[in-house]
Image (cartoon, rainbow, N blue to C red; front, side, top):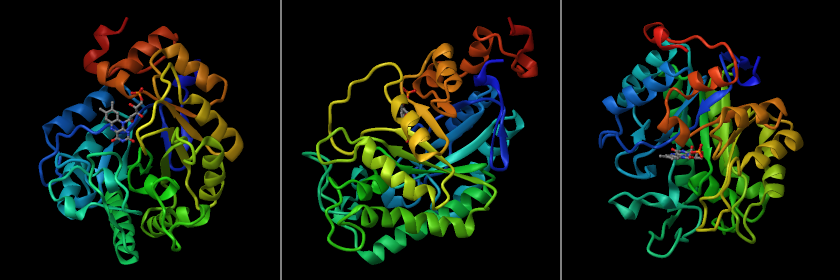
Length: 341
Ligand SMILES: Cc1cc2nc3c(=O)[nH]c(=O)nc-3n(C[C@H](O)[C@H](O)[C@H](O)COP(=O)(O)O)c2cc1C
């Protein structure tokens, strides 16, 4: 049996296969952050396609932490019911579902630029907003927003949360010396740059059930001199692991404009190194498109799950096709069973 289609248990859940849909912003929410029919159909379709684990797109924990004004939100209780609808539908078709909790930091492209915050007043690039340097009081507010969001995610029935620590958004901005030039307890050295994340995880642990898992998405490299590289990320993750994060979803880039050499599975090597050197389960993502390629990554224990982003946008039924290519048994949704080859 192909490893891709063997179940895996992570804390209190068992995924029916190792295919994950990574978080992908749809920019289709109402201006108050609530879901629309688009989300019902978008996530529901991947559950019908038998994706083992779906992670809902970057969902803002604060209105000022949105990437755009069409982002999904989880900053108030009125947003819970809509998210629960997605969760319930996905569960009905046997998939598991998490949500990515996010704050855009200096990459927020919202109309009120005066609210944009980051560890240091350094813009992402020319023409971007120069953020306000976040004060210690505001750090506490944002940590609290993540904690409350985690509580709401539990109320909505999500199986897990993924903390968005990648792609140059607020958490990543704290982690990298390129964007964090603070001279206080939240900067200076590795321990300081990790403090914001540490306080957030410790707060989340108070409200998030201990049997449900916490994923963390990281950018394993800033692809820039003096930024984070894989060696530094591994050292950081050894510390993060001791705080009780369960799985690392390994992406890269996004902090500063940089040239990235793209190619099939270009980030898999990072997931593999983190899995081996930190001793923690990982998700491999990035230009993984072929069933054989996904199988190779899992068979050779280079990662524990494989995530397919754009491929699942092109083809929401990818797991059904992949199973047939790898001669694996997968249950088709009953109304579609006559289409099974
Ligand atoms: C439309 C789109 C939206 C995305 N939004 C997010 C997001 O909300 N959070 C995130 O961590 N990554 C986001 N990403 C990155 C994907 O999760 C994934 O890591 C990336 O597309 C590489 O995988 P792929 O080559 O299989 O598409 C997005 C990618 C796309 C194409």
